[in-house]
Amino acid sequence: MSIDRKTVDHVAVLARLALSDEERNQLREQLSTILEHINAIGEADTSQVPATAHVLPLTDVMRADDPRQFRGTQELVDRAPAHEGPYIRVRAVLDND
Amino acid sequence: MSELWQLSISEASERLSRRELSAVELTRAHLDRIAQVEGHVRAFVTPLDQQALQHAERIDRRRREGEQLGPLAGIPLAIKDVICTEGVRTTCSSKMLEHFIPPYDATVMTKLHAAGIVMIGKTNMDEFAMGSSTENSAFFPTRNPWDLDRVPGGSSGGSAAAVAAGEAMGSLGTDTGGSVRQPGALTNTVALKPTYGRVSRFGLVAFASSLDQIGPFTRSARDAALLLQVIAGHDPKDSTSVNAPVPDYLAALTGDIHGLRIGVPQEYFVEGTEPGVRKAVDEAIATFKSLGAEVGECSLPHTRFGVAAYYIIAPAECSANLARYDGVKYGFALRETGDDLIEFVSRTRAAGFGAEVKRRIMLGTYALSSGYYDAYYLKAEKVRTLIKQDFDSAFERFDVLIGPTSPTVAFKLGAKIADPYAMYLNDVFTIPANLAGIPGISIPGGFSEGLPVGVQLLAPSFGEATLLRAADAFQRGTDYHTRWPKLPVKQTRKRG
Image (cartoon, rainbow over all chains, first blue to last red; front, side, top):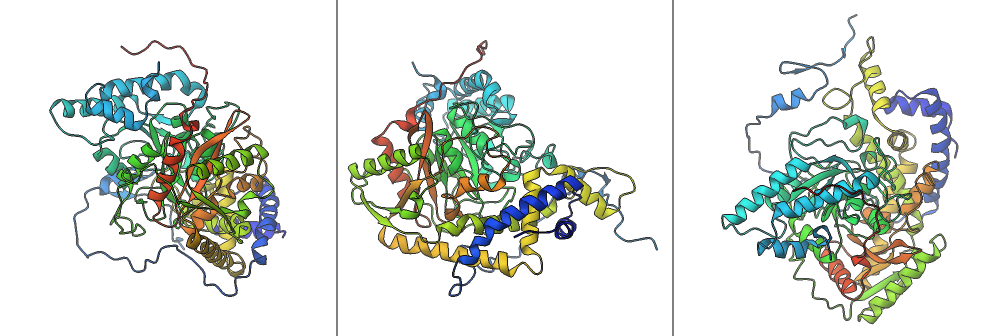
């Protein structure tokens, strides 16, 4: 199952990875090979079974809505690569125009 | 004459509680051992000499003051660098987190510190737990103490090597597709993957959330029982941890496996496994028979789809879990002026992640993307159900299943790194347990041309006591787990 360069480019955008040209070519080849092996699952008869997203029979695990004071905010902000006072610096999300 | 670092946790624990041995002496013995062999083995990303001695001193002081301490108090353990340790660098062997210092402890660390362990260092791994050889570490490869030209396995290679080399008495690793059991097999250590949900994942840097589990490396089943006892249990901070009672694992080690029904899945004994591995496993099965177990054949017909299903599900989950690494909130950031947010994030990620991580993110993103989701991800989830059903049927007739942990012994560094799928096939026997959520243990089962062979036992969910009982009984009848690799040692001045 071969994937083309266009698909690699599209997936790289979805994955937020600015891959080099060489990486894209390599990945195109490697992913095609891997997908060829993976396509074997097509041979499994899954017509009678539901999907398993999770092995435990747990749903809607809740706890009491018990508010507590969190005191570690500045510790978290200090770990940001760019920060100022209590704020994390981020590139502009909205255009100026 | 044996060295202090050659003691088992049980033995050291005995001596410590009788005050024949101090925690400081035991820690110093390990720091000396590390100084002698770490230059060759390279198990550690962050050694913690000073901290370790401080912890050890505190334990000794508490004992002197008459406090009764538990069996892990004063025991030097190594921790895989994917587990958050407050105030101590946690890198996941990635440039992305090279300078990251967690502001909190993982739940397993809170429990281990309450038990008084001495954390001797953070260990090397395949980057973000993706790999089977520790060659994907962004920093350096770890070497197998049994042959320094060979890999220790992965992704928990550092944790396995540290225990095998005597640099730690036990360690924690993580297992998503075999990353505790396979390195255990390659390094002659006992390596346990608990049932999914048995051990809290709070503070474990997530790779694949429905598959990841923390598990111990030790040199004996008894020691593994001691470690599991402390780390197992429900955690309200992990909504995927199970609220089920933790049995007394030590009490389960009766030494008696008469009538234990052991199933031999025919699909685990097909071509592709090295003859030396096959021979050792066959002999181990004979040993189990001689210890009173009843051995019979069974079939796990969907085994051959396991690797394919895993290499859709795990990358899909990883692509979601690794989306958080964007250079904004913490970790690596690539400063280029003129970049908008998306360019900044994309360039940071491309520079901060290694090749295998990028490969899996791309694979996972593709499998989840519109147009491919049904054929890949949904299909793989249904195959997952088939694999679970295979185990459920087998466990109606058998208490445990047996087979090789890995199809090969440790391979040479560089041998498989150029062929991703060849590397993925190392996990053919370990992956099914992660997909089904059942527990598995790899135990030293013999040697092939001087290299360790691991035998894997699998049990139904929450069957860790049965696994440990079987492993312990095997170890009372064999001595593979007591052997030590011959490592070249650097002569150092011993600490005063």
